Structures are given as structure tokens and as C-alpha cells.
Length: 279
Image (cartoon, rainbow, N blue to C red; front, top):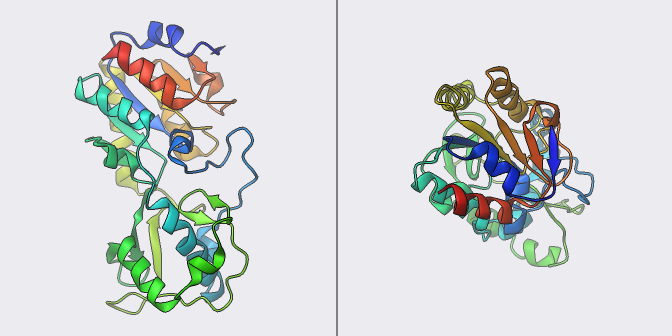
């Protein structure tokens, strides 16, 4: 595998004339102000696991207090040039779909039509009792009413964390909101660490990779370290079927040994240039 600092030329040599499927990770959204988990210089993150969340009210209060502060910022995030470049590649017919590990919903906000939200969407909540889903924005209104002034008291200097979270220690006294239908525990409709990705999403993602490979296409990975298997498996599948894999990421990834090449550069500028040449 080659590792290149020139962001476009070698990648174009692999991708030109091929249909594409993109696999995206947190590095794509950093230019929208959303921090990533494992990028160069990122602090060590310890997100709450599913097992911890369901352990009881103490963990749930801690999660929702942090999320209440983080959501107030994440809800204002907007798609960046990298998201728009992928939309342009789709518009011209070159990109057949996006598989994203991100939960921020920015692909959809940018206008991407074919997206598999592998880990769900942070703008929705699900009840662990009756399984009904609802709006995260409406839950935010309920939490604000239950905890007036909590966001303001946290202060503007609180560090944002990935997935709509915030680095916040003082959560005692925060009041959570139950499901309005059954009184059950509400959880963001995202796949926590320790949860399995729904089989239907996995099947759709494999189908995209298989179809683009059968058409002589390539897999373009943008902004993912591929540390977790939920994304790495699609790179492995592409490589197994002989499909070229191009990775755009700052720093090494777990998929490097399987890749045709890795471009060590930022997603926004690289995808913009790829879209300009490939479209």
C-alpha cells in the first residue's frame, strides 16, 4: 500500500472511470465542528457503553445531562465541503451510495440520497420499553423544561465530545424524561459501544460494496480510522473481492494493509478535489 501526502493525483489514478461507494467516519465531520474519537491530537475518549447505560438511573442521568449540553451545540452543526463533494459525486452518477459510521445526520442534511446510517441518528430517540421512536429536538425541549438553566450553568467553555456529548462531571440533580407513551427509559437511537448494528443495515452496506465491486468500481473511505469492526468489515469484504480501496484519512488506519493507497490528508479538501476531477 502507498501512503501519499499529495491528495489527488494517485487517488485519481485508481478511482477514475469507476463507480464508487463511500464509507465515512468521524474525520469527515470535524470541519463541521464535531470532534472525532481517534484523529491525530484527539484526547482519549471513553464513551458510555450500552451495558453501562442500561445499568440504571445513575448512568442514564449522567448520559442525558452530558447529552443535554452537547446537543445544544451539535444541533447547529452544518454539512461541510466534504459532505457537499460526496453529494456532487452522487449527482453526477459516479457515487452509488454512502455507508456512514457517523450519527450526526450531516449526509442527509447535505442532500445525499442514498445513505446507510450504520450506527443510527443522534436526532432520534427510542424507548427501551415500547420501542417507539421520537424526535431528539422535542426531547431537548422537555429536558430544558425539567432542568431550567442547566445548559447556561455548564458554561460555554465545556468541551464538546463526539456523538452529541459533552465533557461534564457535575450531573447530580439532573432530571431525565421518560417515554410519553409507556414511561420507559429513553435512549438515543444510535448504536452504543457494546451494541450490535442492526442486521438490515449491515446487509444493505454489504450489498452496496458487492454491487460496486461487480461493476468494476472502488470503495472510497473518508475520515475513518477503521478501528472498530463495524466499518472495517466492509473494507475487508471489498479487498476480498478484488475491489480497489482508497482511504483518505489523517494518520494510520486499521485498514491500511488492505488498501490500494491511503491519502494522508484532510477529507474536505481532498474530496472537493476528487469531485472536481471525477464528476
